[in-house]
Image (cartoon, rainbow, N blue to C red):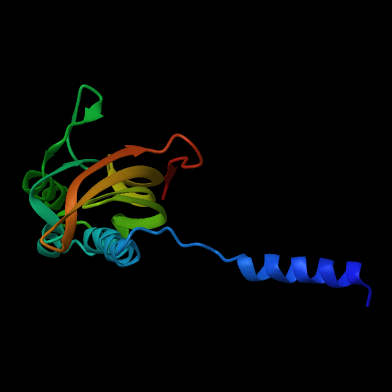
Length: 170
């Protein structure tokens, strides 16, 4: 083996040994992301199951909700206290079969800065509207907050998706 080959091999070996994937993930964020993802899946599950007390437990005391099944004012869903929202949703769904309401998370994108996390979600909701069941995609933004090591939802804002979420009657 010539000197040139040995030199090239040595340089290549040093380059390989010097390369490594650096992880710049903030401390604790993997555990935080897992906790927030569990919160998000619990949100969809408790709403689908109509387990309003379990749903309420996912939110901070002064949380707000602006989304489907709330009264619309001036063409938009107003942000209301979570207790009012859950009560209004429960009343609207009272007596309806389980097949007439469902919430499924299709996609969730997570971002965390310290004790605050935001989750942009695409959900598919089956909703009772005007005596029929309508299924469509919604874009929801959850703001989650960690206080004393515990993550809960601070606010939810939702709007019907304008792309790929054509409403279909069932």
